Image (cartoon, rainbow, N blue to C red; front, side, top):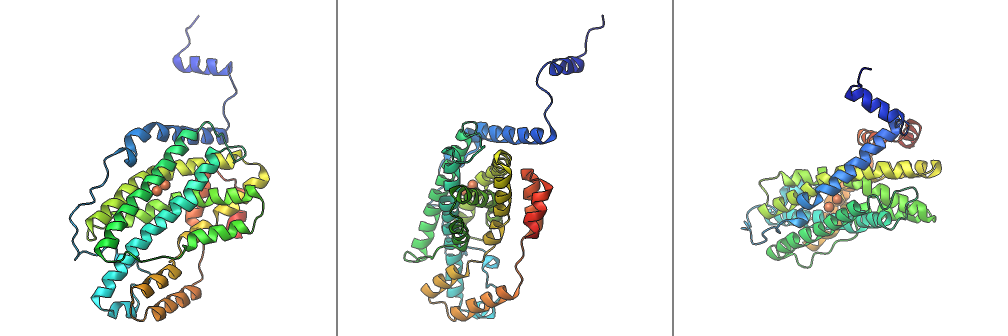
Length: 331
Ligand SMILES: [Fe+2]
Ligand SMILES: [Fe+2]
């Protein structure tokens, strides 16, 4: 008798075990594996486990706090002709708002979504299998709040902006309004999860522009870079969590979840003009009201569309079936 080779042995042993996994099950297995790999690597990669950033880092008041091209009115003539001190103050406001928005995303969008998963409130989600990995992500987000609270405290103190207050962000209020339209608890939870998945996929890009800006205040760039490193792991983690959530839902829930996933990328792209108007008023920026009114009018005249390629990529990553993909995109 000819002895079996290793590949044949493998086939023979498989044939006596469970039937081979389907294509969809194989994909899902890869998502479970990715979540488990990220859970295992957390102790060595998470920045919360590393020394804190040095807040006594040299502060150069002549360096801007933020990137001018990220201001939604940077090319408006009123801004361009404004005295330099007001331009610099607007950049400091930009940095503070960028971080306050980060705090809002972490505390009002991502952390409650993590808690729904940890508490087992999502039907079909294997709660115990990924509980530790999700708790790690929640720990990371709490650390990011500390990181940006510390960094903006330095800015507020150096630039005399202690009292600057900001109204709520459109990203958060849009999610909350969407939730209010749906009295069913399961729909509110799926909206929270969808907003968290999309935010976690988009936040890396949001952070990367500033983390590569070597002309701004060094502390600001470094803070953003530390956050970006954690978020590059969260990007994969939340795509895989999104896939596991999706595949655990029944047909009705799946359809609702896919519809909810198509909304937040629009909210995420908001220039947050209400926040800007409030901040510019507080620093006494000349003609701010007119400048913001022009930005609003310009935005209304532009037909704001969903970023279909980002959405298509997300649906593909989550393994959303074609029928639901085209329905969500054509709405
Ligand atoms: Fe974060
Ligand atoms: Fe995150």
